Image 1 (cartoon, rainbow, N blue to C red):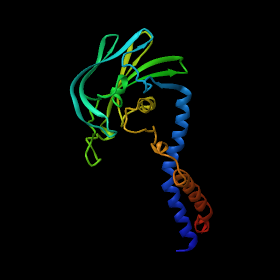
Image 2: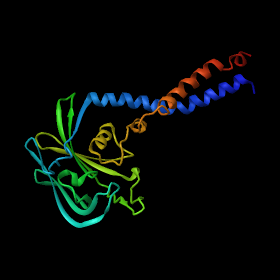
Image 3: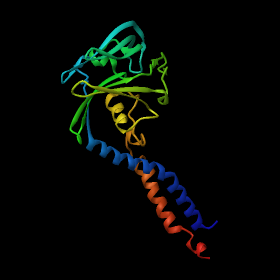
Length: 244
């Protein structure tokens, strides 16, 4: 095989393996810009000092009632003591959801007790000039336990995680949406990240932008390899053979 053909084939391989991921990354960048222009999403939980789990949005009161059933179940991956509790969430004293035997952080206070399980969010729709209050609930019970050797047991695969969001408008009317990691729209993806109810940050088209950038990724791969591959294909394409 001639040198020209070898260079062409190498370039073609580089181009083909780089194109899918680079395309998704570009789509994700434009998608993020679009979402930032459309919405402002604020996590109500300020962390420290802890935000109370009873929250007033306009004239509406959102609250969580808890019945502790097991004070110590296990330690989670960050050494928080996890207990088991029955939880009820209310909007204006109307119960909207029950979570039976759900994990909570018993050593924390306020919304911190439900970190990773329940999130309170404010979503401002810039286009329609509407602000809604979101209660985001992880319905899948996940008991991720830290073992003595440091391993984590009991994690649920992302594909099995299921969620419900309750969107409350200013007059107290609410709607609900069920979704999952596998079936989610653009706004639901943003809410999962803002509410920290998913094990890690995710993207809509690709999770690649959530990784810490380096020279290797994404500069060398996939963008440099895409450009180099395209140049090699362009300049070493067997034009003469096609003419014959």
